[in-house]
Image (cartoon, rainbow, N blue to C red):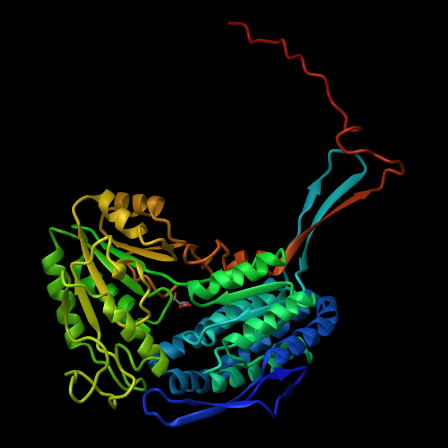
Length: 507
Ligand code: UN1
């Protein structure tokens, strides 16, 4: 399983095995390419792009529709591969594949829209228009936590808009990447229009840099950590490009005194521990009113204790971490727990020496779900994304304090409030800096057709999904068409009708 460039699969590369994190069994061997594989893929994409852009948009939309149908027909198989390679519980993996299908159905229709505008001119015998023009070659670099849904947010609209794509999936998900590429290509994409490159981080960065230098990339899409996002942003800025960056989060969930506490607990459980906390939309800190703090914490603790963790093919709150590397990285973040915190439950790896009651897995790459109470605004834990099953709890006295805590970490992806008062919900919406706000629902689980993206450390303000992502993958071109038969100079030859500016209504 290697890179797919110009319609064929690479047969050489540096081998890297992927294993099932739930069982340790081998899943696939990736053949990693290097920076030149990346540049070659961009060159191929460049060569294929013009003909693809000349293919009428409704026809491109039809290809998107066919891809969606193929994914739907293969939903169970693709979800099973996702579960096998990254340990995402099957129900969530099915949901993730459904997100691909939803995205395809949205953009299939967009092939018959992709509207421009007719705009009146200030001159007679002249008409103005706007057109959406494809950007060119899009290089898309995605993470392994959403190995098909998030790529589809980029790939489907980019392709629909007439761009050619070089996709760099997480190198530790080669089986998923191969399956996904096959479904796309078999949906009717001509060779070279979608190229998949399996490279590690450094080779990707070098390849991207080389391809930009050679003028082979026009748009970068990146989903991953804020640290890498900054580097990609710098690189893109050097080439006068505006990348689409979807980065980390430290997403707050506010519990007001008038909240339905059971609902809030359910929301916190899924937000914090779904996907083992490895979503960019995962819950970071519950910000709970002091009058309901103890009651919330007691119910939340009970819910976490009774939840089943383990075998991702069964009905579990969460399965293993994506890989050993993800678990080790998560464990490092446990050092952020300070003496003034109260830790509820075990921390770190589930082992025979540190077992968990409700556990259906084989000890390996599983982590305990942990609640940390007593989190304050100055704590590193309050402002650091941990990417694992840990949820902080902070308390507040006034609404202003709650808003400050919801914003003060500097991320701005997703935020949630539990309340039964509409005014609280709307005031929170108004004042929270996150790109996405939920009322009485979890911080994660965005629907596929609303704008998705963050502010501050969560991104550069770009938005994916729905009609909004079209602005990432097209540029507006305006057209002035003069059919007057003589030169009409804008601003200078524009007629002006005299106004009686001295006129006043009689009093
Ligand atoms: C991500 O973790 O990068 O809202 C995206 C959600 C999912 C997407 C998460 N629909 O949680």
